[in-house]
Length: 571
Image (cartoon, rainbow, N blue to C red; front, side, top):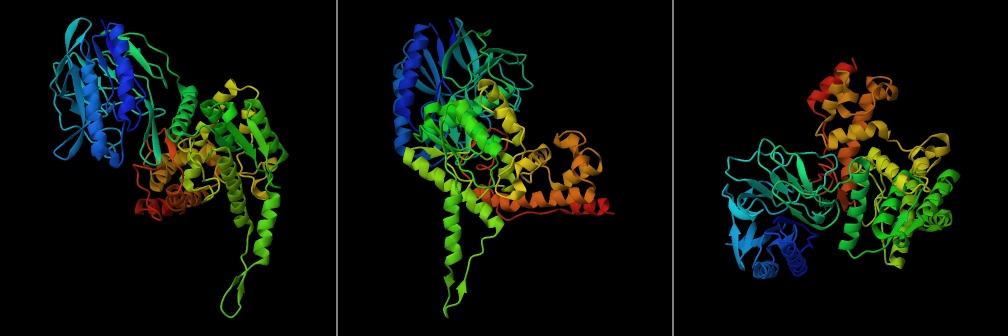
């Protein structure tokens, strides 16, 4: 006799669908001889982060669905989480269904990963255990809600802890489930996206059973539903992807989950011959199928023959629909209109709009977005935003141009992660020129100053700025911290870039300081303004842009510590 772990895809705000899925899993567990089946927190409604959490109709339907689950628990015990409203307060509660009866049971609550956005810790908060039959014996079990990965458990006489709150996938996160404890732990997993507005967190499955020494003795699959039958001493460990494979699979799963959530089955991608759009083509091909992905190359006179050829090579190597639509003719008409027409003020004074070269760069980016939007509408598809986190940090993107799109699957990836995921896909698609594209300096190709044939391109030196920006965005560092590390000869070590790179890029302290000041202002001012209007993104880091982190436009500051260090270094 075993315990059954239900790693399910929880449909958001759909208790009817979730109830039916739970009933089917209960029946499968019963046939397999399980004594107890465990479902995750909010199994009947999903993680709600908006006004639906207080919707009386939804709460009533969740309660009725819970009674249907109880009715099915005649010869098996069922543990699951559900919404509960009492005295005007909505809470997360854990319920035990046994002998066709339903009762709330005690659970120990911690702060959840999503802080105050998702329902806080439950009102029932106790170290009291419940008794569950596992492997033919009544076991004292402690039920947990929230994120316990950095918290030790209080003293308890439990034989087993079950953490019912699935944790989102964070790339590079290797926290133990319950540090400083010698208690076996089952960590429940589920499948799907949790949307907090702009930030969309991915639940990747991987339910895990840890022994008292925190070693994994049983595990479920990644990115897939499953019913697992585990004994108190362990069970099957299904190998999960790691490293670049995990990153690539997460992008595919996240894009697929988002598209499914909005009933989108097709995607249009602007393919430039650069690495960001090449990665997007791989991701959506895997998420939606080759027949449902449409690539459009939109070259101007500034696009090189090499990148135009690589764009077409990606379509051929991936077996995707492809179209070339040059933008020069449309731009010429646009420019002529501004040259011929003018604003007229009282007194017949005329004002002509001056389209400088920098303005024209943005016009080109918006022209491409206009084409993508039209193609997507005509195909009943979405079009994608392919920007990365470095670009989003400092606003290196065009309003309503390359910043536009339905979903930004790669917006929480630094450029080095884009390269890593692309290299993984190169192994899957050997005919696609991903490694060739990666060898070219990234460039928007919007002016002669971005000519890739001359080694020119983006103003960001990703091998350095990726790590500098990451230290600010995710590490909580400030320009003063950066400058102190530089003064102490530890900047490369502290931010994680290649040794010797800082000396190679900056001739002296003055040039480094100028670079820090420029990008800090861009991060705090221009970048903030653009992030506010950016599309929803797939969250894969400890600090993605978007909710729950507020974005305050126009605020930047260099503290006194920075000013003193600057004065010292500049003599």
